Length: 434
Image 1 (tube, rainbow, N blue to C red):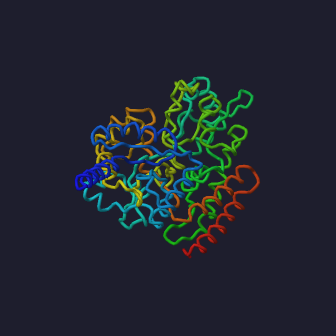
Image 2 (image 1 turned 135 degrees about the vertical axis):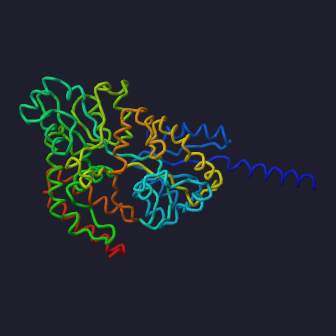
Image 3 (image 1 turned 30 degrees about the horizontal axis):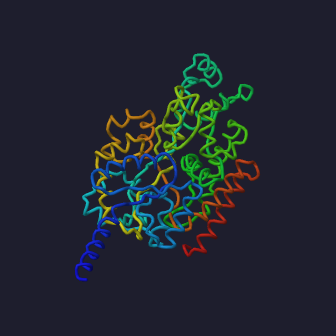
């Protein structure tokens, strides 16, 4: 009997020893997630810890995470989370504060850009409390048809009409001129495509390159005031300007989300497109793009050339967070120690991950890795986020519906922004912020 109990005890010890030799990363189902899983095979070879992926379509991503965390399920160990989820995750107790781990593992926070460290991990802003670290640093960039821009006949015709050289736009007004110039429905060619849809968060984040650079704002995050910011004269002017691009976009532009913008550029339907850098590989892939050898990439132009106060770029991407309910925290700690090293961050970039690890990003090798990396590097210091408080989803829904209504032509810019101001003030008051 004693031998049996001893054997049983040893079996339990063995099971417990190996049970946690696996971690699960939850993310949206898209190419960067696949790239991270592929890279993680090196971590498994080094440590013996397997890495699984729980990848969910974007439309169901937040719902899946909400269900798992509401149940305090240990299914998720690492969550690669949108920046706007941060307040909900922290205040709900769903993710760990990482300050002690950061110190223990010797992670140098100076290796990250301050704006990204704040947006992806610090809550509340300015508190010095970090619940996440930058993982996939995405930015909206401009993709343009270099064959059209470099065509001598197009250049001559453009200069005759606008009085300056056809070139990659140096400001937003030039971008609009170029969009107008290449809008030729009779040739099945349009000047511009971007994400005007009310799906997910697309038009709200896309409008950032207009509202911020015109001097407007979605709100004042310090005072929680919305009225007088989102519906200010500057914000209204920004939305008027933003709406003006609709007439240079293909029919049905009000429904354009990620896939539609990609397809428009890949099929040669548009001369320019604004899209997240994470989708850039698809524009140079001959398997999916007819224009794979005809495109170039650049950071979004400012409103006024040379003015950093009119050069903000919408932030995308996600930060790495650790589930409070994970049963594999020691294994997760090893993963974080491995992942945030110059060697692995360099490999993350080579795998197509959008690193913002300074020692990698600021190297010349980074720019040479992929044709869109310079656009990403130029964008990083200019990136700006919107909300990350727990009621962000309610704020987002109101904003999406009203901005899209402007694009669809059912509301004027002033009407839409007044609606947003009124509804947001109500949401924030009901949530106890005012």
